[in-house]
Each structure stands twice: as structure tokens, then as C-alpha cells.
Amino acid sequence: MTRQSSMSKLCHALACSAFALTVLPITTASADDSRTARKDRWAVINLNGTVARCKGCTSASSLGGGSYQVVFTKNVAACSYQATIGNAASGNPPLGQIGTSPRSGNVNAVFITTFNSAGTATAAQFHLYVKC
Image (cartoon, rainbow, N blue to C red):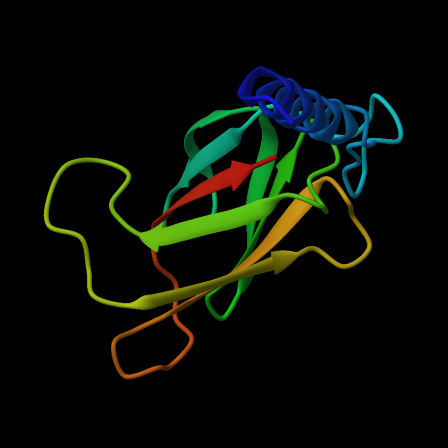
């Protein structure tokens, strides 16, 4: 077999492999309709649960005991959530911890719980980023 023939076969095999990779279907967990969020969204929430500023949210509220919900304009149930304790305005942020999850019963909302540095659920200002 000549060098050119070997290279030709190798190139053909690589081209076929690349083609096979490009025709595989790409699916997402909730790409089923226009109600699912496709753009990133975020919110900065005050201590009392009101919205300081946001992109793509409709409301936020304190549920008491350090629990909050932030409601967005689209379905965010299959998105990822990143949150951090932080001031809505300038100043040193408080120490603490935060947890997020999809809101039960509302696919457009995120449930958030904030804790002080001792691990006790308590109200805190926070920043929430939703990656879809």
C-alpha cells in the first residue's frame, strides 16, 4: 500500500467519524416548548424579600425563617442555580450560607434558604443567578 493510499484511507476514516459525530441528536432536558427559559436570568433580593434589581424575574417574596422564592418569566425548573449571600447595595456582605432548589408547585420559581454563619436559618440579602 502506498503512503498516499494510507493517508487517503485515514482521512476518509476521520471524515466519516467527524460526520458521524455531527449527525448525533443533541437534546436538552426541557427543550419542549417556548415556556422554557433559554436565556440566563438573575435577581438581587433585599432582606425583606423584595426585588432590588433583576433580569427576567417577575417577583420575589420572603416566606419567613430565611426562606424566599424568586419567580421568573419562564420555566427555570431544568436550569442550574447559583446563589450567594450579598448586599443589595454597597457595604460588607454578612457571613452566611445559602441553598437553592426548584420551587415545588411552580416551574417558574426558585426556592432559596439563607443561614447565618452558625447554620441557623435566618433572613439575608442575596444574589441569585439562573443558568439555562
